[in-house]
Image (cartoon, rainbow, N blue to C red; front, top):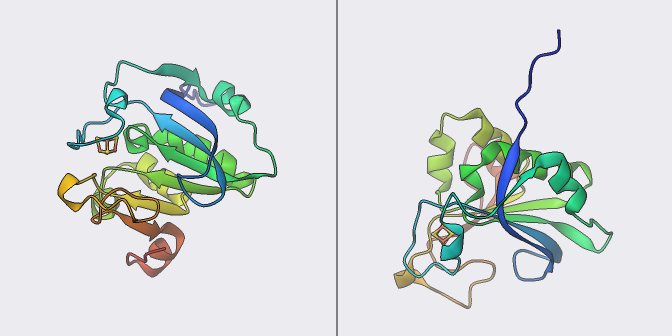
Length: 170
Ligand code: SF4
């Protein structure tokens, strides 16, 4: 008998079809709805509320993307995609299969994610190429840094880090 699989949905704040500021190259950016980090100075406070945004079934959402050869990859941002790890992992997996790279922005630190006892979190990390980790800290704000807002945030090469069992910066 086929095992019952609950339908996975994603609560999404918005999608940008072509961005050049959320990672290298031209990227699709998916903003997840919902974030409990509540960093003072956050640029996207409208993405905090878990009751807002639009709900998509994953297959429906995947058909929404226009993945042309121009697109280098996808960036999962928010909000925080790690509050919806199952849905985010499905999206990341799909882009990975198309040889597109996957960047993820999260307010959790790498260390916190490594200690999370949630298989969906591990699955999401397994489809991620670069993780930009940690909360935005106003006192460490640094607009000149590429692809991040404050100095505490790190660009982590996830594949190398998982292989080496040690954090490796991108
Ligand atoms: S983690 Fe990101 S979205 Fe969440 S409050 Fe901090 S800066 Fe805003």
